[in-house]
Length: 405
Image (cartoon, rainbow, N blue to C red; front, side, top):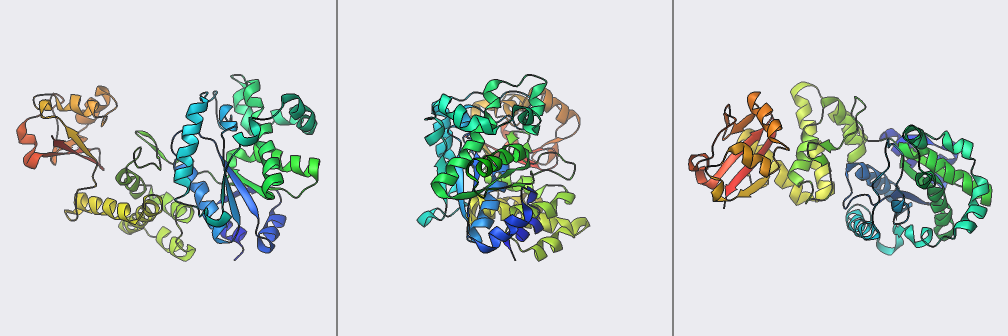
């Protein structure tokens, strides 16, 4: 099957600038393509993981990915999907985040023997002469048309800064530079990047009359249209220090039934026949599909060993089998004995505030060693730590082990 049709069947593709040309191109040539990643944090998150999966599928079909890290564009900040201006990052922060991205990307893409490239757009954007850029690129951009782009519309109400207005031009320049350096023929990105991608495609076609193509992929959303990958602690990170493999596994184990098929198609390499079979399960049987989803996604991101540990920990909690070694464990000082449990849980960030903890306790949503806790002023004692450990259950499915040290 043509890789374009494979991507479409799995539900990745949202829009394409020249659909039939792209299908023919991918069928007859092995092309170089790129996806950009602005280093706004020190870890990739699950939204980036979707992009890495697309790159992996394309690479398996013989095409060469470029992971373009935004050491230049990151100094400006993409206004797409934003109602406010992004935080300005220092050069030191950008460099650190770029290095973190590079390490993580190597888990998903084969960079050996030039099969893929990691490139930093700071190499050219930071060296640009402003007047030369205006004269060289400026005539190819219509301000009227730029202002109609979705990525700018949301910012118009609060005020679009001239800094952000330049982002589209910088991204288009990236495509032009990658075309010149590496014969890159296609830019891919999330559907919120459509306007920016079109700008790059049109710049190459107008200025150099070169073949250039753009393709956007669907954003990772729930069946209700909400963005996936948000947890009570924030984003679902790929760095195990920011989101543990256990918590990562639990996120996918607990997705809504209606989202299972979509996640299996987008975030695993399972054949579509199997995806369709698992996605069609109903009632209690859909839990088997969720176990496979959680295991497969965790295995791809964190490796077989961590996926197995997370699965074992889950089995131990819900069926009394397996090992608890991978359940989130928090070491607390013995000096906490005599303190209020709520204070300890807030201190250890199991709750974001005392108010959150009190509400859950009043709703019978907190258990200690399998017993519902009704007292918001519960004092910790040695009796709460048989074998030096105390099990806390928050809500229906979140578990924590408190260990006395």
